[in-house]
Length: 139
Image (cartoon, rainbow, N blue to C red; front, top):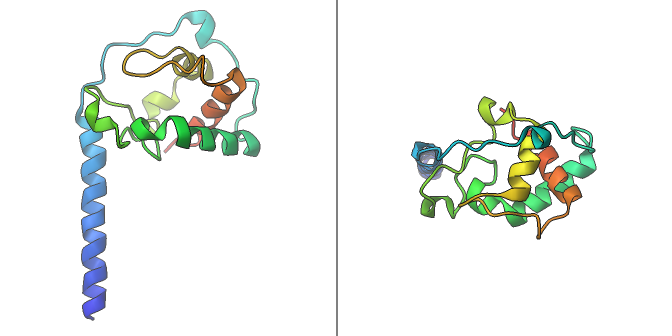
């Protein structure tokens, strides 16, 4: 019984911490509107949605390049998110998921402060793999 109480207490602490991290991440202002040029927004992803290899590669790239700010699940609660003045976004949200693949590609490739540009670090194929992976974060 004592062990069960300890386990339940630990789970309650973990749940409270998780809730606090998520709500704090989303409490920050969004930042300025970020428009994507129409030609870039309409670009089509050459990789198929749901492609297992693209998802796997995208997940690995996410872990290396994105999760420190955007979090493991794309909730904007990464370890570096606290140091950023604006929200790192919630990639599972309807708002984010309603953007086009071209918009996701453009913003990842070009960047804007505090979001870095990945045009020198990742190939176009790798960025498209990230886009495919970001689509898996949908609620």
